[in-house]
Image 1 (cartoon, rainbow, N blue to C red):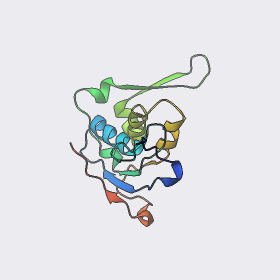
Image 2 (image 1 turned 90 degrees about the horizontal axis):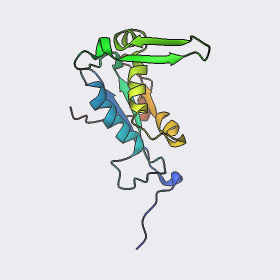
Image 3 (image 1 turned 60 degrees about the horizontal axis):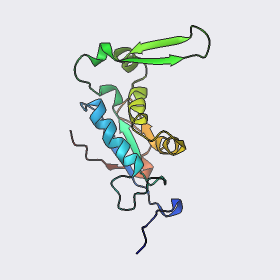
Image 4 (image 1 turned 135 degrees about the vertical axis):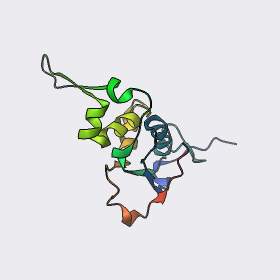
Length: 144
């Protein structure tokens, strides 16, 4: 008997919607990363993108534990000397709440070209509305 390997054209993708209100950042990000990779499917293959689409709403209402709001720092660099910029988690949630969850999920994906393909299937919105109703997303059961 041979080991089954999923082919990219054979993958059936499902759309899921997740409400991030009152969810813990890291716990939610791990479950989203697993769905994006396709880890829950019987046809999971590590080197093939077998994951599903995930739509996250209410990203601005995500919560963190401890003192992370003031101690966790996000860095970015412009590429010029002295161009290192930093923001705390509190500032980042005020300005770009979608980016907080996107960076948490990105850190849990593989570090290769496959990760960028999987991250493209993640749609994050700060409010309760999203434009993907035509895809009829199914609510994803998130375990807290």
